Image 1 (cartoon, rainbow, N blue to C red):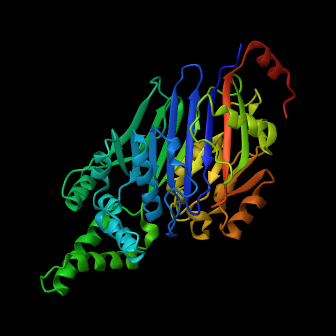
Image 2 (image 1 turned 90 degrees about the vertical axis):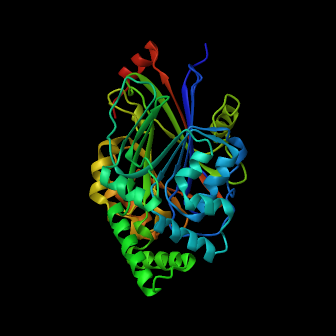
Image 3 (image 1 turned 120 degrees about the vertical axis):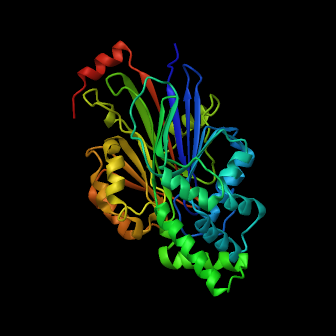
Length: 426
C-alpha cells in the first residue's frame, strides 16, 4: 500500500531583489491544498521585469498573498500575479496617503509609473476589492498571539482601536477595516504575522501639519501635484523610507511531533536553468524524485528523534524589518516560536542597517539552520551567521539562483514507531 503523506514545497525564487517566496501544501489523504505567496524584503528599487525569475502561469488559485512592503518592483510583481491567478486572501501593511505618495514619486522619477501602479497607490484597499478578493486585511501593529484551536480553518485578526480607525478615515475619506497582525490556520498550515512601522498618529500629525504649511506657503492656492511632491519630499527628509510598514511572516505545517509524525526534509539550490514547479500536484512529484535521485541536496533528519517534542521546519520571512529598532517588539511576538524555525529570510537584501545578530542566538543548537539572503548581502551579516554556529548555512537568491525546500509528514506505523523508540538518542 502506498504511503499517504502531507507534502509541502517552499521556494525562494531567483529574483534580483527582495524575496518572492512561495509555499504549497498537498494532503494526499484529504486532497486538501494550500498555496501562499510572500513578496517583499527590499527597500531599494532596482528596475526589473515583474516576471523575471518567475513563471506566473503555474498559479491558478492562491489562498494567501502577502505584500510585505511597498516597493515598486514588489507592487508590480503582485499586480502581475493577481492578473494571472485567483487570490482568496491578501494581507499588506496599511500605508497612509503621504507614504504612498513617496512610492509614486519614486516611480515618476524612474519613469516606472503606469495606470495599474497609480490605481493601486491611490487606494490599495479598493484596488484589492475590485479584484474580487474575498478577504482583504490591511495590517497595522500587532494583535493576537497564536493559540491552537479545534477549528479546521480560521482567521484571527482584531480591529485597531477607535482612535486609529478615526485617523485612517480622516486620511482616506472613508472607513477601512484596518486590523492588528494576527494569524491564519488553514489545512494544518499556520501563517503567523507581525507588522512593524511608524505609528499612524505620527503620520497623521505630520500630514495635517505639512498640509497647513503648504497652504500658508502657497497663500491658500493649492497645486495638488506640487503639494503631493512637497509632502513626499518632506516625509522622506523627516522619517526616511525605513519608517514604512513591513510584514514578518512565520509559516509552518502543524503536526503532532516526532512521536506521532515522521518527517522528511530536503534543501537544495535552485538554478534558473531548470524552474521548479511552485505548486504541488501529483504530477510535480517527478521533479522532487529527480532531485532526490540526481541532485546534490541536504537531507535534514536530526529533528525526527522520538524524544523531541517538535519538528523544526518553520520558515521566518523578515521583510524589511529593522531588527535593531524593533528588537523588543519583535522578540515579544516571535521568540515563543523560535525553537521551530529552520529557515530565515534575512531582511532588506541583507543590509547591515536592518540586522542584529541577536537572531542567531534564537536557534536550537545541534540542528542545521538556513539563512537565506541576497547575493549582495553585507559581509558582516554573513560573518555573524556562519560564525555563530557551525550548523548554520548561508544560502543565496539572486537573478540566477534560488532555494528549494521539499518535505513531507506521514503518520508513524507501529513498526516504525518501535524502530524510532529503539534508536540511539544523539
